Image (cartoon, rainbow, N blue to C red; front, side):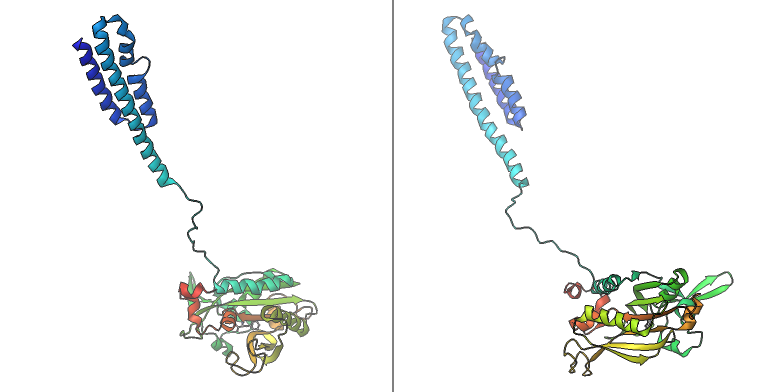
Length: 348
Ligand code: PHE
């Protein structure tokens, strides 16, 4: 009899040991089948009690039953343990959808990019197409084809960054384009009139920087060539542009100016949108703000692109891009645009 009791004690001991090692509901269930299931040893002992002599039946039965009850109790304790650690894992992984979201940093377009888009959108709506040209340019396109041969005094107005291009026969003069006007030439060589184009892009000047000068800035060039294009088309187009960009009741002022690639050349100003023309700090008390240079494309320039100036004529204009947000937002230093200071850029 004591053999039976020893067996049960041994079994109980082993069962407890294994129970402690169970880590999941599945492992626990396998343990239950093994030690408390219908085919388990303890249940077998209890089932076979009838085969023992009557006096042993009671003792073994009691002992086996106690072991069974004890193991059952410990199993439910272990179950609680497993459940709560599984629960903890879930708890940690849980997402509370009612919590306020974490603020995420949104990027934004640079004020120059936004202004270029705004300008181009206006001209696109008037039937212009957008074209781009290279920033590293041949001397020919930046100067010669625009009526500024070598030694032309107007070149002095464009402090140029030269980049010599080495060929087998020597260096050919290249430069960082000083304006977007070379895109006029490149376009007219390829597209025959009628043509209406705006060309945004970066330009470079070899200059010391200060609050009003940067060695790199942006321009938007525009031009139209067709039969019978006159100064009236230039005025109508730019007047409409100025009103859309700066407000419906803007006035435009056209005054004579000189650019070798246009004849006649004009400088266009709008009445100051801050003081309405009375004179203030923004317009330097003149009541007017200069926004662009323009004119009728010089016949020599057309001819150089294979366009007959007897048959065709065109107007062209070019404007500085940064100047527009500078005026609008009262920015006092152009260097802020390309200093990559997010505190500045985030304001737009
Ligand atoms: N390219 C000139 C500049 O940079 C502007 C301009 C363009 C003037 C087209 C007339 C016609 O100053």
